[in-house]
Image (cartoon, rainbow, N blue to C red; front, side):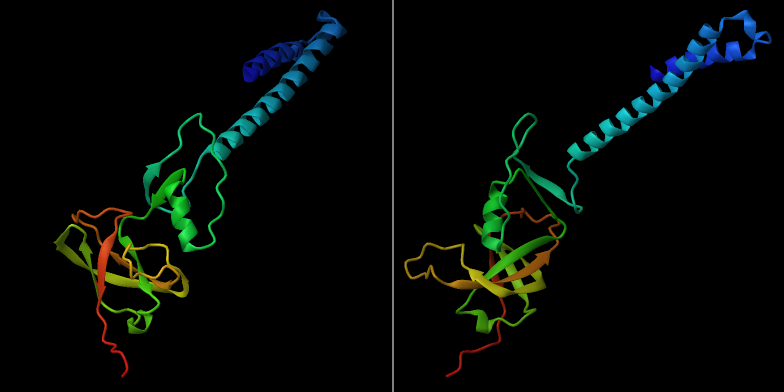
Length: 204
């Protein structure tokens, strides 16, 4: 609309500008046309700045993923208030926050497995050892998994089996493996039974 007004003001002003006899119109009308043209130019600039501001506000409201991946869960909808979640300072807190996160996103190709190795068994683990995953409920579905990395800092154990002999004050070493999902009936967040080959033997 501002550009249309500018075009009209330009046509009117240029008409007076082209007059051979400037006395054909009064000085007042000529000046009014001139200032109307200048005002139309400023209106276009203001409109363009408003458009840039609106585009900036829209851009700020768009949620962009920092990495490539797949949306696994959405717990927020249009019109709802998005609360500010605390920052996780360790893996246990991260898992708790992930369960109540607004949007859960992750890489699903390949899938990763985070393995907790009890501190009493850490001496038996050799970095990069071959491992195999078994699907709970159907041990016939099993597949090899590949070493990815080891996180050398031990953290408090957060996943328990419920056995009466299990210690609750123990710490675990976390190791990450990955595998190609393909047609396997395995999904992100699923708990698997992992068996890791060990060549270490307890000293006598």
